[in-house]
Structures are given as C-alpha cells and as structure tokens.
Amino acid sequence: MHSGGTDLYRLLIVDDEQDIVEGLFELFRSFDSFDLDVYKAFSGGEAVEWMRKTKIDIVLTDIRMPGLSGLQLMEVIRAHWPECQIIFLTGYNEFDYVYAAIKNTSVSYLLKMEGHEEIVNAVRNAIIKIIENRKIDDLISNANKQLNTALPIIQKEYFMELLSGNPIKFDQIDEHFEQLGIPLDPQSPVIMISCKVNHPSKDISLLNRVKWVQSIHMVFEKYLKRIVQSYYIEYEKLKIIWLAQPYKGSDQETVETETILNSIRGNLESVQEVCYESLGVSLSFVIDHKYSDWPSIPAKFQSISEALRYCTDKGIEMKLLTSKEIISDTNNDISIVQELFRKQRQLENDLESGQEEAFQTSVHPFLLYLRDQKTKDFRPAFEVYYSVSLVLSSYINRRDLANELELHIDLKKLTRADGHGTWTDAADYLVALAKLVFEAQNDEEEDRAKTVIHKVQKYIMNHLGEEISLSKLSEIVYLNPSYLSRLFKQITGENLFSYINNRRLDKAKELLGDHQYKIHEIAAMVGFSTAPYFTRFFKKLMAISPQEYRDKSKNKSKN
Image (cartoon, rainbow, N blue to C red; front, side, top):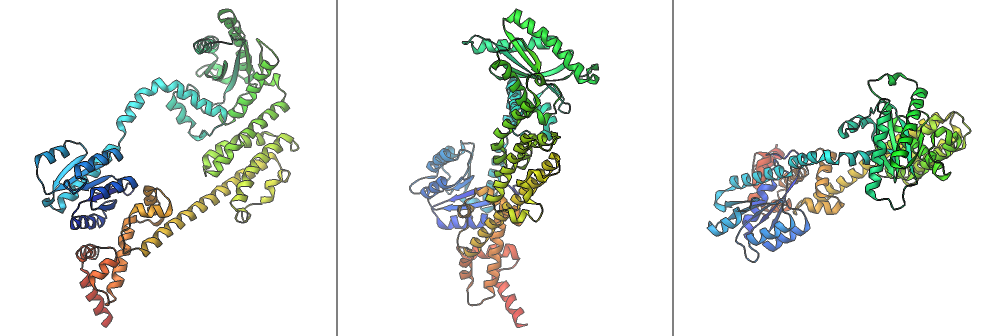
C-alpha cells in the first residue's frame, strides 16, 4: 500500500528484546511503499519519552515488558495521542491480556510467531484506519445541516468584510453569493442606501433594537420590492445599509439611473412616514447618487457613512438626500482618502505575508480612486499614490530588492508621482511594481527552501552511519516534520526516506569497492545495526548481495 506520497506516518517499535526491535526497524525502514518515519524504543519508558517529543501515529509494542507494560503504555498513548493505532506483538496468548487489548477499537493483536508478512499487514491496516478516521464527511454533513440556521449571521459577516474593505476575492464573488444565498447579482452594479434611526431611547434593549431594524426593513420591502431587489444589514447601532439593484424581470433594468433614484426617493418618503406613525421613530436616508461596482463598494460605503454622519452631526432629522447633496465632491474625496489611509496597514500585512491575491484586493480601492481622477494636479490623489508607494518602498528597502528590481522597472518613479503622465499611468505603474515585488519574494522563498533542503541533505550525508529520523531533521531546520517531508519532495522530486536509502546505497557501493572494509563494518558505516539487515537492504535494491557486488567490482577493475 502507498499512502499517496503526501501523508507521512510515524511508527514507533517498542520491545525489551533488542533483536526484535532492530529487525522490525530495518524491515519497515527499507519499505519504500510506506511513507513511514520509523522510531524504536527498548522499554515502555523510552516509548513514553518519544510520545512527549513528537506525534506518533502507530505503535507496535510488546505487551509484557519490565517496568511499564504494554497495557500501561497504551494508557499513556491514549493521553497523548488518542488517535494513535496500537499493534500488540507478544509471545503470550493469554486471555486476560488479549481481552484487555482488543476491546479497544484502535488496538490489534499479533503473536510474534506469525512472521513479518502478518506484521506488515497489521501496519498496513493501521494506516487504512488512520486514513478513514481523518475523513470528516460526517462532520461536514452535520455542518451543512446547521448552515441554514447560521446563514444570516454568515451573510452579515461576509458583507461587513466587504464594506470594511477586508480582502474579498472578487473573482470568486459569483460562487460566494451562490453559496451564501445572497439575492443580488454579483455582476451588476448596486445603489447604496443608508439609514439612521433618530432619537431612540438611550436604554433601548437589544430585542427592541432588532425589532425596529426588522420592522424598518419590512416597510422598506413593502414600498420598494417592485423597484429593487436588495440586501440589508445593521452595520452600526441603528444604522442600516441597503445594497439595491433594479428588480430582475422588470422593466426597471433598462430605466436610467436618475429615474430609478427618483423612484427610490419617492418611496422612501413613504417609508419615513409609515415608520414615524407606526414605530414612533424618525429616519434619515442617504442615497448614493450613482451606481457602484462591487470592488468600489468599500470606498463608496465610507462616503455614504460620512454623509449620514453629517446628518447626525447637524441634527438633521427626517432628511432624504443623495450623498452628492450632502458632501461636495472635494470633501467626499478627502473622506475617501482618509479611509484609504486607515487601510494602509492591511496592505503592509498582505505584502509582508506574501499574500498576492489579498494584496491585489486590498490595493484595488487605491488604484480605482487614482484611475477615476481626471485632473493631474490633485492633492488627495498624490496622498493616495504615496500611501501605496510608501508600503512598497519600505518593503523593497528592508528586503534589499532595489538592485534586482531596477533591472526591470524605473524605481525613481516610485517616489515621483508627477513622473507619470496620468493617474491611470501611476496606477498601472504601482500594479507592475507590485507584481515584480511578489515575483522577487517568491524567488527569495524558493531560495530559502532550497537552502533548507541543502542543509538537510548535507546532514544526511554526514550522518549516514547513524539513525536519521524525520523528527531529528525537522529540529535541525526548525520546521514542522510533515511540512519538511512535503517540502523535500517538492524541491527534489524525491521522497525523503527514499533519498536517505539511496544515499546509504551509494555510500555502501563506494565502500564495497574499497577492500579494506569488511561487510559488517560497511553495514555499520551506512546505518545498519547488523550485517544481515544490511545484506537484505542491499539485495532488495540491487538484486545481488554486497559480497557479489564487491566481487563484480573487483573483476571489472582487473579487466
């Protein structure tokens, strides 16, 4: 059986009889068909030490041992690694021991006299059980059953992420909307409508607040459902935002924006009146004065929020205005710029962590703003440009990438916004530079990975005569063992333990050509405790024994 090349399983062999441990250790270490990292212990106490050092997937252990017995060891294993599979191997066929062991579902039982084939099969079956236990189909099924209950909460969380400008993969927005059951078209622009409930009681309860918000939305739906389809959330206490699109299937899709806005505005007047008379609350509405595409929503949301805040600060009640009527375009730009500055930290985090897609999402509002500017000499646009420029230049300096990048792009323009013909040119420059930075970052990470693997390879070559475990190698390079195993395969194209065995074989062949060493000495020099284990290993890979290989080499040198 082969585990698929990516999953690695740690096998611990425990017995107080050294010959048994060494024999099984060599048996499983030489099996390329298993992705096994093999460890050995000569007592229950040594096994416990391994349990404390590293995760163990399978334990092959004697039941009766001096000190800590196999059954006592089982209790320790359960405490540390509950999913660990245990195979008891013993020469004692006594009912009480067998019963105590096999009543546990993660335990199997073998007699020592059953031979290697049965032991190998037992380990194979243990791996199958591990794979089955890792399946989470039932958990996913149960989660899906609960999804409908949690869906409104998830929808709100998703839209709060979108409105706040946190990374959303807009190329996957169709899939997101379908999965979350959001009743809007992700390919069509939206009109944003914001509402503030004025003068609520200061000690309003959460329940009453929820009732108010839901009631307001129901009134909104009553008057506007034939005009728009919408989605709403309460984004702050008693502040509601609707994202609306012309109602699908109606003639509204072909109506001009101005007509749609007038229709929305007229019906919102009715919403205000009904809510005032029925709920006793006054509402202030702000409608965006034009459609927004989805990537621009975070910046537009800040603009609408500023407009609604203006109403509150000025004590304006029962107002129904467009954002354009409240804040001039210049002030609106300044508001957007201020919000973009607050998102600068997200740009830094995405760049530092190498999240290229997330960075593209985070930087999109900055670039969109620049491309919207028609006047070259516009102070807020300079501020936006330099906010992105600062993030990139800081990273380039800290990573000492300037010399490499200057081969592909003019870095002087990074600090000279006026060096670009238009703001669109400036935005395109930032996109191109960011792409080069991530490429350099990827190259740097690949170089670091190669350095790590080279260190591992060097250690292996210098310690072929010793036990080489994945746990030890991972400690040397400070990496998770499973990750190191995957990384080694990714960089070299070769399984880590196949690499170790092949290097041992290469070294053995080299030493066999030097007749000053005896076979048992060569066995020890390439990490085998006895000559028979070494011979079995060599013959398996070369189809001839070490002595036969030596004799052939000797004859070749004579000829």
